[in-house]
Image (cartoon, rainbow, N blue to C red):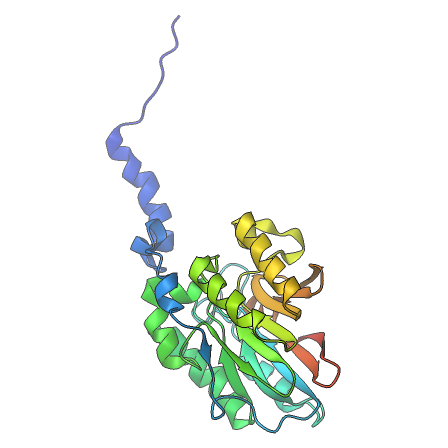
Length: 292
């Protein structure tokens, strides 16, 4: 007997598609299916922060607080538990004077859905309490921060209001890159290469999406040719460390003349990092902690 092939009626397809699509609706349904590449618009210039915007009177050795993947709006979802921001802040408040961070760097994914309210919650619940302790926060943009057209809210609420910038301390140059589209793009990489070539200082680089992440390729920059170019630029221009997030998993990868430190997630892993900076010797060390 000839076997008949069953084809479900076309009207049944929405029953399969709609539930899946609804899962992503809160992230911006249009952006889930199609997201205009606005990277070049975000990184029109490499901004140099002025003296009023950067840390002042830093000692030869000091500590910098690093957090990543804060995900306001993502609490109690999947692997994330309830928010414990108060517990985290008490941990930082209790640090000894020698450990107290001079400033904080957030490596992105502040907002789960890119909503203005999520950026405001981060500013009110974490940034302001840190500022009350004398700890200013510098921000990197993450892929979640772009959902629901979140770029204007990122600029509005988060210091310094741009995603591609740098500043200089006593000896180090600090570079903050926009990898939120899982790429630096030709324009950003060209500007970065040009600036790094004329900058002899030892460098620290901060971004969201990793280059290698100990081989966790699905969560790294997907264009291998671009990734190799970036690694080459960093190796040729005295980069001492690249510090990123995105994977929520802590790892260290040696990429030639520098190490890539991928930080564990603040919300999912209850993690934060203290960088120990030695300006005199141009060294950086990472110490990892859990706040809960």
